[in-house]
Image (cartoon, rainbow, N blue to C red; front, top):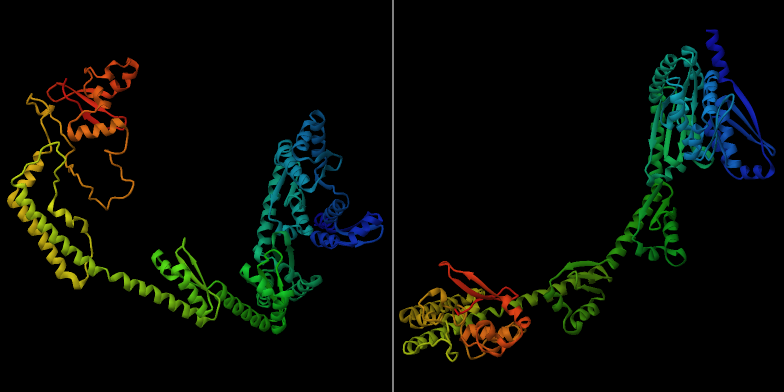
Length: 639
């Protein structure tokens, strides 16, 4: 018991250290809150004098505070790893034999690592020192001192409760291990020459951490709520001090992580502290609100010289400011009732602004947009002039937007636009009567032509290759009217048209002469062998030979093989229709003829020869075909 009390007394004894500074360093520290921040972080008491800084607290806390102050003054952070005397001796011997151990760590982290009689010391930038310390423990000491130096890691929010020197000293006396808190790597370091002692101490430290977690509450805030940190602290720390006095809890603020840590001696006190903090935050949200404004509305809301925003603040007795991080957001502060009134005023202003500037949008078709615009835009301009609104038409998105003006005027503009659309829809229904009449006229023409065809075609015949005659289907005159919609008043006319077409077709079937002669003209015999495989057609199947250009409805630019294309293509087309072989294709159709093309050089004819392909028919006989580059294939006459 005496040993436990002695070790605990030594571990909890307060020590005092002085850090010498010059006048420039004193001026730098006096103008910042560095001293206050380090004091709160390390649980030490610090006093700034003109020539020194006095630090008082627990031994490990004072050492950590001193390292932080020196870093702020010199830019160099000093870290260390304490070891047992026998362990340091082994490290010293290993480094003397192979200095590359620390050299590799220095090369990879940029921190300088040296060993002295009391500890391993590490110097450099704070982040580099922390990285080097973790590397020394994990890569070097874990190999040199297996299980003789162990760490228990924890979240930084537990450092304060786990750093209780009295409780750590008690575990040290129970196990015989040396235990200290290392804030650099958020761990408790446990060392002993006996690995079993270290294992036992690790178990007790873990049990202590479980207990500490019950006595701590961690509250983390989103980035959008970072403003609450300053509210919780208060001016000069007044708010947080008041909380600590009322709840008997300790509140630690970690600003860079937007975290508040609540500590107490019992779970009941921790819960009371959390409830008090929740109430403070709830009230703060009622007295400080944020409202997003459309970016394009900001100039109008702020007003010239800030007149608009000042009026909102004065009328509602609140403070209105634009946030720095989000320029389109305003912050309203004041009492709860005043803030509520200001909020309603701002939202009403935004709603009215959006109605004037964003307007009412409706979807339209291309035809409707054309009707609304009118000739030269006269229709839409007249609506704008009459209502005082602005009408924007987007022909790409097919939308129309009515802006500005009073609500009643915007509604009146929409009504006039809808009236234009309804009027256009009424006009579009009128032509259905004319379409029905047209069907009837075409039906009568079809009947007359069918009767004429019956009389004339029965006494005449169609000669292949003679383009002077025209074969006409009596039903063609009304074929182009398929799909025409007929209104309810024209149903009788439509039925009459269909009956007329049926009558024309029946008369054609009775004679059958024109149809049979047209079919017989589709093919001709090209040789006298009697073999049907050697027969070809004078014109493509279904091709009507016409002399009059009566197709007025054909689109411009339609491809006509008898006009467009190369000489060979046109002559090939005429050959297929008439059987006449032109000069341009004579050497292909009749390769053994005495035409001028047969006297050309072999090189010139090689391309045409390559286009003539010989294939075998079903009887095994060779048949010659001409194949164009586009894939068109024509069977050639037998040689």
